Length: 404
Image 1 (cartoon, rainbow, N blue to C red):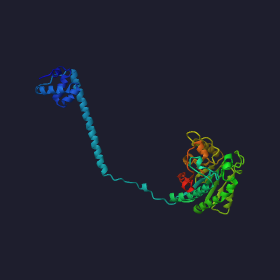
Image 2: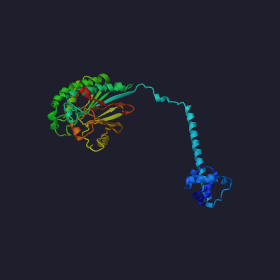
Image 3: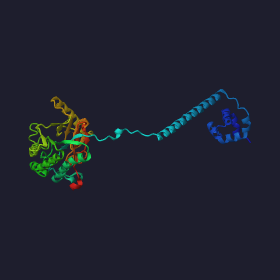
Image 4: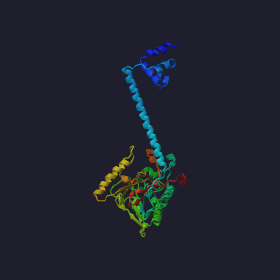
């Protein structure tokens, strides 16, 4: 029995297309019904009843519009078949390449494992600055991240000289060291330039200088025993001054650091292994192989409170100093400084900035500066690469052994 829905199929505007799809047999009745938005059950029942008569009979003639739709559908199907064929070809090519890779044996170049060349030379350089000897830093005032006093300063100073020998010897093997350059860049003493320092230091600066003289002599002797040759470069810092306000006239010779280093130099006057360079100008230039260093304390540069920190002001200061040095025919390659208590090694940009022996203090904490442990710069200058080779900062802070 034919239902009213089944009868309505004959009057459907796409009946000829529906019948053509049914006769072709490429799709299920459900798929064909969905394509023409008709009831799937109705189409299935109607086709079950009328299939025999329509399979043998010729399909109704298609009008021009219906023929166009069939041609477009055929073209679309052909395009999909071509795309699938292309994808299968890509997969086949991939499998073929995988089979080739299974048989691949890499030819590793010999230079991947270079043999150690003979006669590699270098000079170890280290900065000893911003010791602030006999200043007292109380851990209770800075959330327990550091402490400093005379006892701790002695331990850190000894650790500096020990590591200046150990790090190049144990971590940079295969280099023949031609000597050691020790750059003493000021703020050796914390001084009494501020009232709070005068009230809290462990001793008067002159007494501090007398106490630590033997420590410096012993450390430099250790370096000379290991490296054979030691060159000491000395410039004063702002805390070493013996007057309240900074001066330009007599800045160096009125500095306690200058006097102290002259006493140290006198201890080695009969030792040709150790040489000293302590000019009366606030900057000193030393050339190692083909690399020239300008040593300065760094307090003449200002700025650095923004997000970019101290780097941009110091790069501007470096550029300004280079112009001055070129004008007086004393150019340099790398500026080495202390003062900022932040270790930054940028030799390719012409800057090496030292940390401090004192470490984080109440001023740094109160100003919101970034924390870093007490450390000093050490690197190796080589004939081939200058100052850009090996940098191994000496971490002098050791909470456990210092017992704070």
